[in-house]
Image 1 (cartoon, one colour):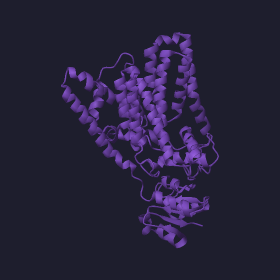
Image 2 (cartoon, one colour):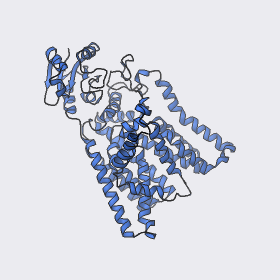
Image 3 (cartoon, helix red, strand yellow):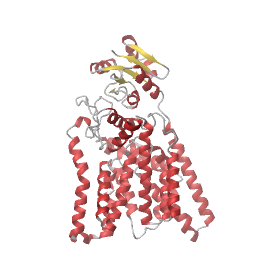
Image 4 (tube, helix red, strand yellow):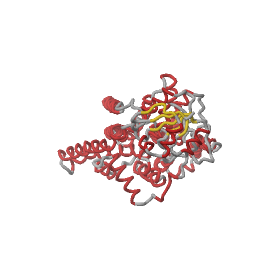
Length: 488
């Protein structure tokens, strides 16, 4: 790599780092805080309680599945808590601050930019690789989610590392390249479902570089078999382990095709228009992206990047309702968006001069890029707004109630308010196992709840439940944004 290229790469990464300082210190109550709260709670409990990697715990005592499957240990057994454990180390060193967790996400996401650069440098050119990293770090959707308290940034990092190190192993066939490829793939498969779908472009690259004849070559065949066994072992053993605690496994059946959404018009509108078209590419990025798709493939990697895109599409169709419901399920699209935007940009600024006006080509690039970022930001900017009163209510509960108090929240099944209270307890209210009614309140009290807090003041003002609360329990503190009751 040329010295000039290295300097530009570092400057791009620094630009991405600077962009992510925007509202880095806000309370954990922004977009999709319900999922961030569970991730952050595991990290905080690792730091403040006994560290137990095999039994990650959230703050919520409410059942994850059904009332007949209680979860008194507060277990939360999704992916292995690698991200949470790293955050917990920083919490123990510097204190519990959500900004530290966000910085961990930022470093992982920006670190994936290096893998993307070297992968594209091998496949195409340094200039195209730089453009890809630029788009990766500057797309507003990526800026927000790469500083969210979620394991997705780690997933992007290890997935990008998996593809790069796998490519290097196929070329070099050294022990070191084999080990690095194995480590990254093993980690990637433990983080979310998407890395499994990357088996498609990896299988293509294997056949392209080694050919079908590798099956008759004992050394290559055995090394691939060992690779597959080693990368599968961690996730296999993790899944076997967590099945001992079904009460701690979040429901996942609904992710596939709840309500029969797959292939319906609403599915295509949400995924390809609202999310990919508007939210990520800001509409005006589509011409550059489509141009990148149409540019001829290079011999070295062939259709590898297109198959990577196809793998993403398969993932979207398989986990149809999950992708429609949650926009952060499209985070794996960000490296692909960067790659094909870069290919389109590189061609438009270099090769298009043979057929088109160079001035018009540069003008089109400028207009498409600026409008893409502007309109995408217009969609993403609201993600930074925090839920009204949640941080204030949480701070008041933390200040006014004993540390051992169990809190019943009245907002919804969303754990954001409970997390901000810095207490264990039960999520209650809308769509929860403790809806806002006297019977549920008394059931929570019988399980130890001693504080009730809500920011949904208007729902209590004239309701029967609101009257029941005021007549039977003392108001600890109230404002125009929250109410806190003593349930003892």
